[in-house]
Image 1 (cartoon, rainbow, N blue to C red):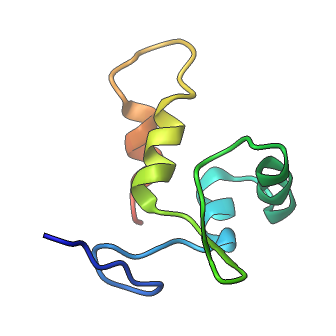
Image 2: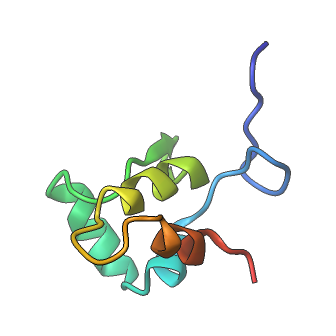
Image 3: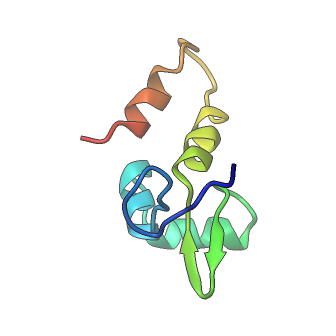
Length: 82
């Protein structure tokens, strides 16, 4: 079964730079710098557009845990869609 990804809406949609910067509470410039430095979450290029898969963002955030309770509470906060 092949998954279909959409740039807007649907269960397999991509996030743009502004959406990711809001979720991570960092500037778009920081995301761009991370890409140049080969840091930060995995991204996808669609032509000249940069997009992020929500599951890639969640996985990257999960790797950042450094202390405290390791139950994944921080990941749940980052992925909530309020």
